[in-house]
Image (spheres, helix red, strand yellow):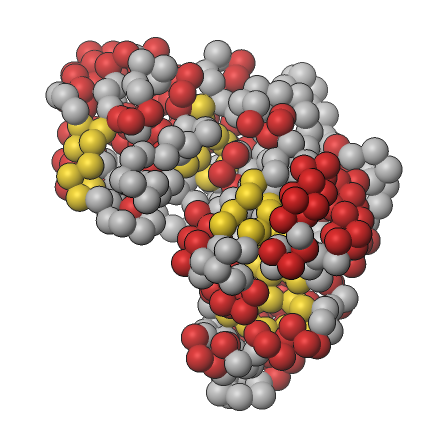
Length: 482
C-alpha cells in the first residue's frame, strides 16, 4: 500500500478499495445481548448472527471477495471429474508455489487430517513453532505428540520483536538429536502463529529451519493459511526484503518447504483448502484419502464456484494493496488500545487484535477462564463477538486436570475488507469503557463440557451475578445508548 500522509497529521489506514455490496447488521440493546449470551452458554460460538453487531470471531470464510472473484464464480465448470475449473486452480497454485502436485480439500483442518493419517505414527513427535487447536488434535488422535519450539520472545505479551513466530532452531536440532530423525514425521511451521496473536516468522528463520531439516533428513511442512499477513510483515519488517516483490517472497518461502497446505477460508478469501506437494511419493500416499474423506480428486469437497473464486483470490494475494489492508487495520486498533493503556499483544500481528486477558482481568484465576469471561463481557457491552484463545481452547490432561494456557487472549479478528474505520473506533470505545469497569467482571465455569474441542460448543455460566452488574453500570454511564 502506498504511504499517504494526512495534512492533519493523523495516521489512518487508507482503504485501497471501494464498497460495492453491503450487508445490513443490527445493534441490539444491552438487555437483549445479556439474554443472548446467557442462551449461548457464554460461548460466543453459540451466539446467533441476528444478535451480533460486529462479528470478530474469526477471519475464516468471512473475508470480503473482490468483484473479480464474484465474476469468476459465474464461469465455473461444474463437471464432477476433470473440470476446467480444477485445472485453472491447479495451474494457479503451481505458478505461485512452484510445486508439481495439488490435492484439494474442504478446508485446512482436512489437510491436517490427511497429513496426520499418512505421516504420524504412535510415539512420534511433531515439532512446530506453535500449535493450532485442530492441528494438535489430529496429531494426538493418531498417536503423536506436539513439541512447541517457539523462540522465547514469542510468549512475551509486550515486545518489539517483529518476528515472534520464529522457531528456536537450536532447540529443533537438539530435539532431532535426542529423538532421532525416525521419530519425527515432519516439522511444521505456521505462518502467522494463530494462538499467540497472529505473530509472523521471518524469512531468515525459515531458511535456518530448512537447513536444520536438511541436516537430519526431515520433511518441512508449512501451514500457509495466514501466509498473506506473514508476507506483508516480511516485506515491511525484514532487512533485505523491503524491495522484493510479494510473488518473489512467496516463491522463496515455498521453495524452502516440502509441503504447503492452507485453508482457503483465510488464504484466497474463498472457502476450501488444499495441499501442494513436492514429492511424487508423498503425493501418491496422500491421494487415496481425498476421495475417501473429501470428494473426488478434482474438487475435494469444495464448491466449484468457490474454486474459481479461490484461483482469483490467490492471484490477488500477490497484490500489496490487498494483503496490507488487514495488518494495517489491526495495527490501528492495537495502537489505539495500547495508547489508552489497555493490555494488548504487541507488536500488532495478523488475523486480528488480541486483548491480553491475564492483564485485563488480573483478578480472575485461569481456572475460571478469564479469556472466556472477557469474550462474554465484550459481547455484552458492545455486541462485538470475539473468540477465546486461552485455557478454554486447551484440552484437559489425561488425568482430568486443567491444562492452563500460556496465554489468555481474546482475539478480535478483522476479516479482510469487511469493517469500516468507524466500526473499529466503536469497538475501541466500548473496550475502553469495559477496561475502566473491569473489576465488575467475574469468571466462568462449565455446565456442559465436551471432551474434544470443548471451546467450539461447550456451555458455561458466570460464577456470580457480575453480568447484571455490568449491565447496570453500562446504563448508568451510557444512558439509552445501545
